[in-house]
Image 1 (cartoon, rainbow, N blue to C red):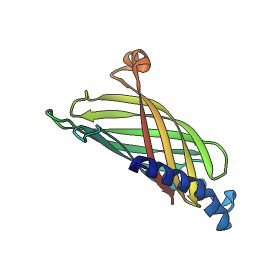
Image 2: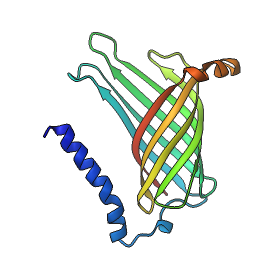
Image 3: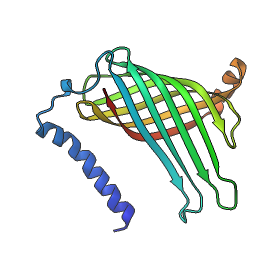
Length: 182
């Protein structure tokens, strides 16, 4: 069995065991998650590579948020991305965005929807505004620690008119990470 298949099987087995571990520890869903006034920190990553590892990208995103209610968090997100191109110039870029997310439910698995607004800057990109809609899932593995999966539909703009024009030309950004409430 190749390495990717072994890794996939191990990842799936781990994901299946998380709820079983939580139940064995006597944790109940009402013990999980934030309360009004709590803060949140997340760290996520994403990356790609060619099969020969000649070209690749890597990105890191960090969020700091404050819970305005048990379901609503508002905060700031910083992303940094790096692209390595064989026979080309390597490039760095980043974005800083404010965001608001609304979470559904009070259990260990908490889906959410939200929006973000900010700016993008760096090598190979035009310094401009960026806005987006997002959806995701937080799964609490401990009372204040969770695994995060998020997809953002982002579009660039220079003005209100260009935001309306560019919405249909957006792109999806995906992250997987971990976070905790404090």
